[in-house]
Image (cartoon, rainbow, N blue to C red; front, side):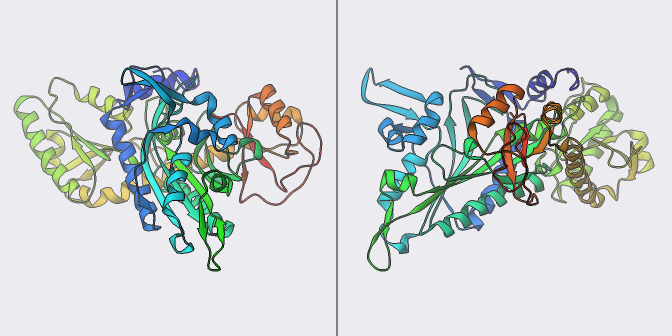
Length: 477
């Protein structure tokens, strides 16, 4: 593969295909997620779905096709999405009376049914989620990161008042941060988007941002407080305890398959993928070594070891059905595909009662292959995998911190955003944001929730800062 230092984009595009995560679809900008890549999504999905249900939400399913008139009822929303819309104008051999939009997101269609299902304050909060595909016509597609069609979940909720809706908005943000850090080992910076970066039709937008290994940011999950904007457009109202009709406050929030791209770019290296154990389709791969009779004996022992490891709740694969491939080829392949732990098992190992364990990355400097008694391997592996998961999170956090700097002057700002993130003061003017983007390709990624309160002069125009703290700027995917 092309080295990251030579061309990070080429490295990424080559790796996602070679690692058998994804292939290009037949329509420009679409993708086919292969089983190995889809398993990563399933593991993410299962954890997030559990969190969503534990918090009292119910899964539902809404139509892919949305009447165009629904989108037009919330003007700011349709304006924000209009360049990305895919519209169906003909079906059944004739022109439709009204064009149908393939959902870019479902606030409008779900809002229509919230209005139908909500009558009283007793019907609130209404907590819905759906797992679905959406379509956004991308001009510059990139597999997993920006594709014309992708998979995601979208939560949509309705509440009695702003306070309850904001609690929901922040719950979703915390849930996304938990998934990113605990499963994907991606250290996040959570906080609010600037007005110029808000979701179309939202009152407030919150985000988790993660730094990739080229210093760019990836927006990895967003949560929106929509106020009563969509409630007004779709008449989502309820009868309060005094019998008055009152507009509901709504939220929406989503996480998509771009998280897989984030995992790749947060942890991968010149040898290929590096998968956190909690997201790895195979956490352990056993490669038996030997030819003919010895190979058969090694494979039989590998299968016995695999069964013992599986009994510990570990996802294990025994690579024993490709005798035409050399052990070295298999080592390189599984390394490229990011398997956290490989166990090599030949007759000499078996006779010595050991297995040779190789981590995808050494968690301790100088740590290479180590031989571990076969009898102890199954019980030791959960701890080894947990240590590797923690190591990846700490490694990514160090990389982010090493590539983030506090800056005050414009020259320092432009130099910093070329390779990482800049923490800088900003005036809050969207025109100023546009000027910064035009000159540096950097945008305000997040107003960090945990940043200290500070004031100063805008790094670009010199006017007083507007947010009471520094904003993180960076180039982004």
